[in-house]
Image (tube, rainbow, N blue to C red):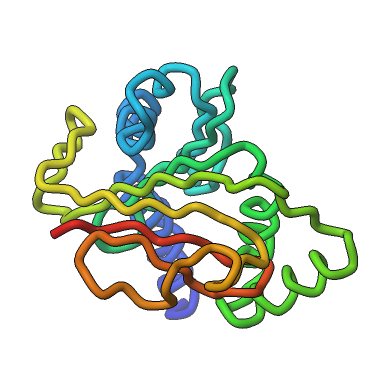
Length: 197
């Protein structure tokens, strides 16, 4: 009888726990409005947008018609962080999401994607490809409007296999907001710009 009571309590409590988790999922229109914050103004309305459904899964909220893909804020992570990137980076980014879903950590994802790029299974763009990032604090985020006050921009330009010699860029910034090259000589070499404050 005691076990039956415990099972009954668990069955009653489970929907409440799930409901609490799902309360973090904002309406699609708010998620979209937040996700496109980093994009240039002219590109916001036509960008493809990923966000979260009521079960917490990352899904396409809006199909796009231009060259940008935007990712909504993960409601299970502290702070607000959204990004938009060139569609040319989608295979690389999508593979990263797949590996994360499989439980891979940063180092494992980096090694697997590096091997797949080297083998030709995963193709990186030959031209520089832009990523726009906007982030800030939870307390500065308005869940009813999707606006984020006092956020910061950071820009990342993927340039696979670029080096300091090929770009003229240093591998560390020596002034705030200056561009510098991260992961030089690798498949994920990229120019970092910002934050500026």
